[in-house]
Length: 330
Ligand SMILES: NC(=O)c1ccc[n+]([C@@H]2O[C@H](COP(=O)([O-])OP(=O)(O)OC[C@H]3O[C@@H](n4cnc5c(N)ncnc54)[C@H](O)[C@@H]3O)[C@@H](O)[C@H]2O)c1
Image (cartoon, rainbow, N blue to C red; front, side):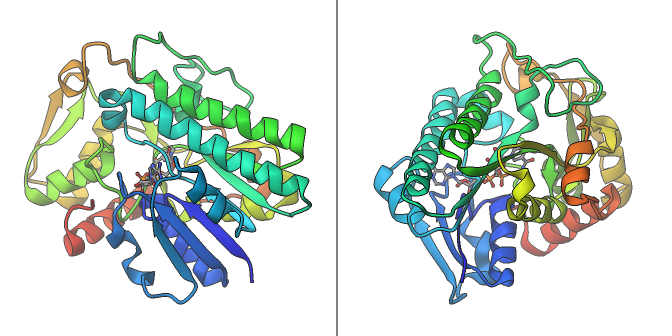
C-alpha cells in the first residue's frame, strides 16, 4: 500500500486531495496546524482507517522527519495563503513558505541518497509571475516582482524560492519532484476569511449583503474547480515525464472581477448589490494588484491531457450549495 503525506491536508485544496488519495487506496498522513485550515474539512473521512492526522507545524524538524520518512509521495500544500493575510503578516509568510519546504526537500534528498523511491509535489502559485505584463503566462516566462517595500510581493517571491529549491533538489539529488502553479482554485470549503474573492462574493450574496469589488473590478482572473485541480495534481505526480518540471494548473477562461460579481448576483441573489472599495482601504496604501492573470495551459494539456470539466456557473452553484448547507467555511 502506498503512503502519501499531505501537508496542509485540513485546508481547502488539501482536504479534497486527501479524500481522493484515500479513495485511491493510499494510507494518508495529514499534518496541519489549523492556522488557516479547518478540522471540519476532513469530516467525511475523519474516521477512515487509513487516515492518520497530526496537528502540528511543519516548521518543526522532528515532525517533518517523522512524517516524511514514512511517505512514498509527499504533497506539500501547507503555506501562508491569502492576499489579506500576507499583507498583514509578511514575516510569517516568508518563514512559513520557505523554511518548511527546505526541511521537507532536505529530508527527501537524504532518503533518495539512501536509495528510497519517493515523489513530491510542491504547491506554487500564479503569484510567482508577479506583474509580468504578458496577456497569458507560460512556465518559462520571466518573474516580474515589485519593490521589497511592498509586502504583497513577499508571497510570490517566497513561493519562487520554493520552486528554485525543488528544481535544485531534482538537479543535484535526482529527487522526483514536480511544481504546480495554481491559478485561483475555488470550490466548496474555501473560506473567504483571508481575502479569497469567490467565497466572499457568494457569502455576501447569500446573506443579502453588498458584494465588495476592489478597485474598478476590471482586473481579470480565471477560476478553476478544486476537483479538476486535485485530479491534475495526482496525474502530474504519477507521470515520470513531469518530474523536475513546473506546470501551470487552473482555468484559462478569463473573467473580470466585476463580471464575476454580476454572475454571482444573477445565480445566487439578484437582489444583492455591488459596491466598490479602493485597494488602499482594503489592504494598505502600498498595495499593487495584477490586472490580468491568465495561464497558458499548453504544457499541462500536453503532459496529462488536462481538460477541466467544470465551468464557472457549475463552480458558483457548487460554492453556493456548500455554503447554504454548512455556512461560511473556516
Ligand atoms: N487556493 C488557491 O487559489 C491557490 C492559489 C495559488 C496557490 N495556492 C497554494 O495551494 C496551497 C493550498 O492552499 P489552499 O487554498 O488550500 O489554502 P488553505 O489555507 O486552505 O490551506 C493551507 C493549509 O496549510 C496549513 N498550514 C499552513 N502553515 C502550516 C504549517 N507551518 N504547518 C502545518 N500546516 C500549515 C493551514 O492550516 C491550511 O490548512 C498553498 O500552498 C497555496 O499557496 C492556492
